[in-house]
Length: 80
Image (cartoon, rainbow, N blue to C red; front, side, top):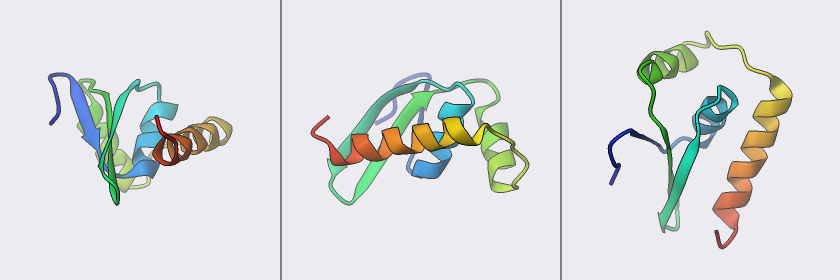
């Protein structure tokens, strides 16, 4: 259950993009083994950025994106 100022994201690639745009990862909910939810710090423009992501209108640093994606994958598969 999201707390105030937490943005629940269940799409790993989107979470990695938001982290690349300096959104802070608060926690990862792995209670369901087949489905993770990433909770990021919510900002005023969060939903605008998510819309821009799905419309392919965002540009991010590919190196940072790759690092954040690897970090999220590690968190999914670790005992964290």
